[in-house]
Amino acid sequence: MTHNDTIVALATPAGAGAIAIVRLSGDKAIEIASGVFHSISGKKLQQQKSHTVHLGHIKDGDRVIDEVLATVFKDPHSYTGENVVEFSCHGSNYIQQEIIQLCLRKGCRMAQAGEFTLRAFLNGKMDLSQAEAVADLIASDSAASHQLAIQQMRGGFSSEIQRLREELLNFASLIELELDFAEEDVEFANRDEFKQLLTRISNVLKRLIDSFATGNVLKHGIPVAIVGEPNVGKSTLLNALLNEERAIVSDIAGTTRDSIEDEITIGGVGFRFIDTAGIRETQDKIEGMGIQRTFEKMEQAQVVIFLLEAHKFLGQGEDVKLEIAKVQHKFPQKAHLVVVNKIDSISEEEGKQLDVNLSAVEGSHSLLLSAKTGEGIEELKSSLLEFVNTGILENNNVVISNTRHYDALLKALEEINKVQEGLDSGLSGDLLAIDIRQALYHFGEITGEISNDELLGNIFANFCIGK
Image 1 (cartoon, one colour):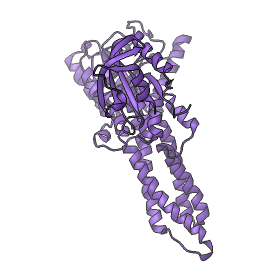
Image 2 (tube, rainbow, N blue to C red):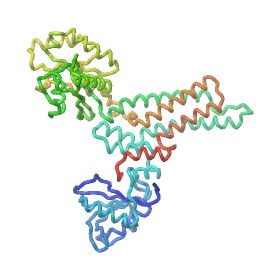
Image 3 (cartoon, rainbow, N blue to C red):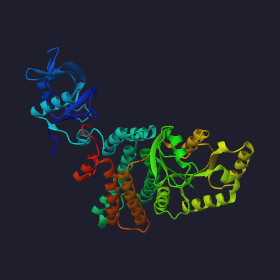
Image 4 (spheres, one colour):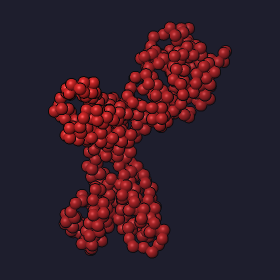
């Protein structure tokens, strides 16, 4: 791939629609666009100011392809930092392809996935973490994932990393300078100040690394496993949460043999609900496989809804508490929510007894509901939201959600720890410098100061064509 030619691609989703946008970027973008665009006013695009819009026709010779709006952006004041022209045409598949093919014949090349954003990165319009946020912004499907992407795209994360890198780089320069005066045995880098800096960097890195647990689930949706014995209403609860008949409901125990998953957004946060096979002793080989998969899904889930049947909880309260305790012991890090279903089938007096039994269950949140009538469903949604710490987003704290960034931060922290240990043990400056360089390298990987073609290829291959 070369980046000094002019590229063209459809910037809007493929398919027919009211409007489509064909985007050109490169040194000759305005020249090529001017060759196919004929303004109604008779003006040439090369003579127009940046950030102006012009009405005219796209023509192939004497043949009119479409009436369009041509928007002109002149370098460096464009998304890519190059000359850019965008044709807003009618959304016919035929028209889109005719305009693109015409531009190709006039000297353009088809853009590859993410190449417009890649050029923006290469031309210094954004750093690498901001470029990755563009893809996250396009893919965001909830308020939380959108806010994460916007925060990163505005440079909050990369600015913090850049500040740390610059401070560390200053001390690294002083230590490198000491190596030039090794015979004089002088110290340019104040070791006490350096220790304070390393402690501060370490604390920031740990905070960012810890934020990944929240950022990752907000970005991809929080997995919630609905578990319990057969026929307690797990599938009915899933259908009630989704407000559709997603899972088959039957009075026959063991109807669900495999896990069923679907997603909804609650309060701007995505949740991925998993309806699992009922947990019980069984000789049925297929049902046994489903139960095994239930435990696997519980392992993957961030939240476990342990669903109970109202009558059984009344009659065998101690046994049920024992079962809940087993689950809590097996998955101690999971957030648990004990939900008693089918309260529509019990009396008011029995409901009071349920409240007493639930208050005796330690280590779990609990509530009553009827998946059949919908009573308590909104309370369940509110309880699920309480498990999510979205306050860190509202307070504009930096949260990371990118696995590549998480990996780089872990490696940077490891190198910072080595530098701290080296300082405490009186390690020589040349050996300290090696670990500092490695930490700087991992910081640079995040923002793109240090990158290679393979890394860029992996990142931008996940973009859509035209972005």
